[in-house]
Length: 242
Image 1 (tube, helix red, strand yellow):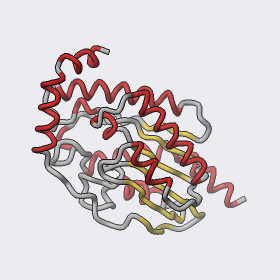
Image 2: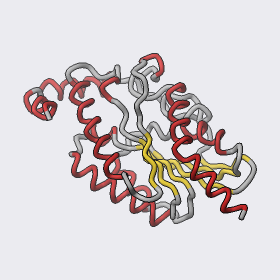
Image 3: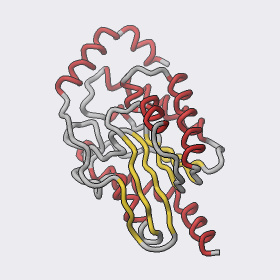
């Protein structure tokens, strides 16, 4: 909790740093490529990716390099994958709830969720964020009848080179607290899988803006998500064959 005290004491400094970061940050586009489609052969698997800028592949040039492409190429080896991305750069968890509430009700077998960074930078408190995240998960369960919901943890923001000190340290500590709380939120929930975002602090693997993943991090992230849901996908495939 030392970072909370530091945030209060250093608020004028942190506020100036945050404004300067927003003003000077390199604004990268979303990854190009389709966000809906079908690929592969075998039993049908319906995949939905929900989230913020990382879910739409900011930091990668094309969706093939982003999370969607990394998951699709693995799942398409054994399944006919109906894939869709419903994500928006800059989205908070509350924004995502509002957007999904307006979307069409349909069935998805696997839903991947990655949110939290914009809540942290938007100064959403942990208790409010957890309430929003719980509402989001209930919405996904009810609206999409998801068999498996794969929740990615909050990235280790203390390694983001774009953020100057002491802002990086304060934000990083907050991100760690959010991540631990999110892990506890989804623990022991039937059909939920948690993916740790414990990537090596290698700046060369990040995007040029020093804030978003680069293709190598997306590749590792995709592998982690696939490993988390691999047994579930196999189980659903066997059920379809029986």
